[in-house]
Length: 392
Image 1: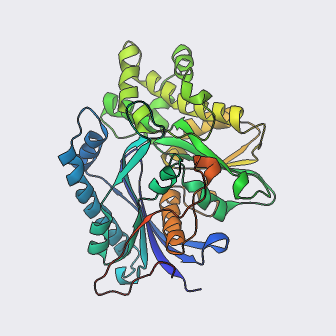
Image 2: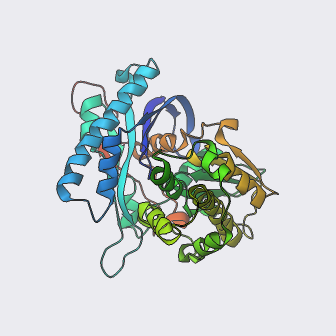
């Protein structure tokens, strides 16, 4: 089987920038072998981040904005691929395939009386393909939703391929804008995998830091470290119906984004800023712990938790998690096979590779879909470059 060079692109719910990873992938399915060759993060400009947040806001968004932003982000993603190849001293002509998650604008996991369950990721793949002269796999979530799933989480399939273990039960915890977990039971198969969104990650913390200090996030947990947790507020926050909901479940910025942070500030405007940030940080840890306690511990007690995402760099958050889970070893991906920040982008490189090999790649026990399905849309490049073909 010929190795393929695949670039994975990811921009998460925090919308702070584009993670791009250059990988070499051999084979597919259970035989997948992944090597990360280089990784880079390209921050969004303040102007671009403002556009993205405006597009996410139902009260301020518009059809023309989303239409334009779809193409603008396509150029941003293409530029990220070019920058990554320069950084790696790797000719872009050697890239066989790009897997792009896109930028989530809105996610509705469950239908209600007004809206149908649906999801929207933008960042036009045709623009990425044309600018890089490379085929693109994208739009990975929609087929799962078409089959009655929530379109999330998608990473568990890749977690299973790369990190399943015969001796230990491992949990892969990603603390991005939202916290999500994949539990890989020792000696388990794909059907035994548990995975779901646990609730808030960094989004509420980031929004509070932006409001109080004009900074994008709490670097090293410094503001949380200065504050103290307000127990009564934490108790109120934990009285959230999402935590009682049984998996499969998913959530996003629509629930735990800017409006949530503004609600906190409005309700507790007389409280110290650092105390609110500390409380929000503890809230993320407590939400993870409660979900673990209620839905995982009795079924699959975990030996190790490997943490990725921006939250892995917040020692205050990780410290609270370790205090709440004293019998579990908690470590970041830097101490294992994959850089913590590169994990999700690398996962979409793998999902792209699975798509072109026609391999089903969702986990119905995690998303609630009726069946396992091939995920993603394929945008070929038909110009003057050797191109990968579906099934190749």
